[in-house]
Image (cartoon, rainbow, N blue to C red):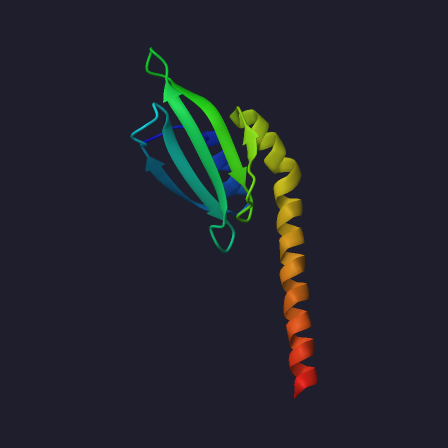
Length: 117
C-alpha cells in the first residue's frame, strides 16, 4: 500500500469527500503514476502523482497535477504541503461555485420548460 498523500486523504475524509485510487506503471518512463480521483457526489476531481524511488528505496514525489472538475490545464505542485495549502483555500469555494452554476442551470431549464407549455 502506498503512503503517498496520507495528509491529503485525511483532509478529504474530514471534509466529506470520497476517493478512489489507481496505480499505473508506464513502460517508457522511469516514473510511477498514482491516479487519485475524488469528489462529494461524483469522482470528477483528479490528482495525478508522478513519483520515483530514491536509491534508498524511499518514494520521491516529482510532480502533483490537480484537475478540479475535469479542467484542461492542471495546477502543478511539487509537494504535498503545497497541495494541501491550495486545497484548504480553494476547494470548498470551487465546490460552492460549481453547485451554484448547477442550480442556476436547473432553474433556467425549469423556466424555459414552463414558458413553452
